[in-house]
Length: 70
Image 1 (spheres, rainbow, N blue to C red):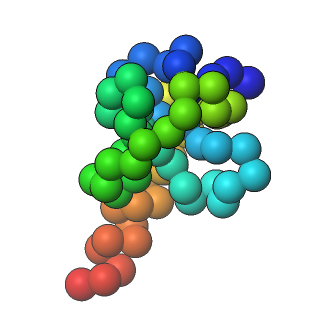
Image 2: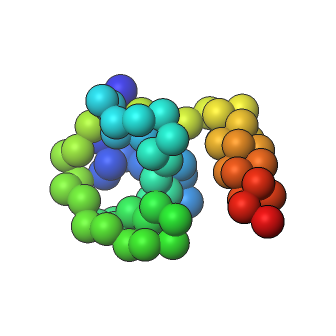
């Protein structure tokens, strides 16, 4: 496990204990985004960095969900 501070801007991550559908992206050194909404976050917050496969799977699920809304 790593901390928010250790992530690179643009990395996708989850917060331990949160739903698997709650995926965040590091937007700056003190903010992350979820569904285009910026949220402040503490630098020492423990996070789980997503692999490229997990990010890809996340976008497939999100795309399928958005298609179902039509």
